[in-house]
Length: 339
Image (cartoon, rainbow, N blue to C red; front, side, top):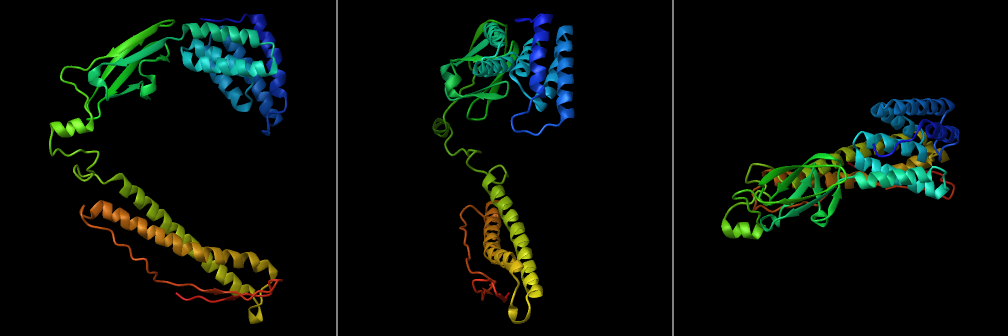
């Protein structure tokens, strides 16, 4: 426990927070029952904190934050996470609460600043370095990749056990686990196991002439290249979109045919229908062409031999004509189609 508020300060916090929760929110419509529910949840969270039920208090405060987040609510969220061992998350919430308190010169600023400083001193740091044999490897800390800029630098972590996964670019990997304690800086040098050498792609090709590289030959192991699946998905989506546009076009033609009187004179309320018919008549063939092209590329990537080239026939098999006869008042429109 790094920072504890007594019962009197807690009540003072409640006296400040509850009126704020009742105030108008920042541009989001909130009903009176929602605000009342937020006040009740905040009362429950304070009671749970006093009883030491940090998990229950955190759950209640997270519900309050979905109704309204104030610097006081954020402060108590940080306290709960700190006591539950989620030190890095707590530090982030403390810093946000401190920033918000500084902006409005809140009376809680001193308490928030003190809690943040105490926790900063307790958050452990991890420094990961690699030996020369792992120069081209990547490192993941608990499933999150550490970029090159973080290797050899301090990284804040929670106290406890962590997993370091080292991946060589030839596919091999190994795991090392490390335990860190609060208020310490743990330095870890990752050494390659017996026979483990990370090499660049060029070095691999020099060592194994003629060897196939899975990353560059998608068909070698029976898998289809990713770009073929992407092209196929885009092709299917475009064909479906073209069908939908063609349906809208047919509906527009029907509406114009049914709504226009003798001499193809249409009322003003059909002007938007005319515009819609023009637009989809242009968009539908384009979408169909894109869809067919995507499906063709996908088929090539999945089935065609490597040396076969792609031939695309750009000739259209259908045509559509709209001829308009409109004066400044949108007197009428003539529609004709050829398929």
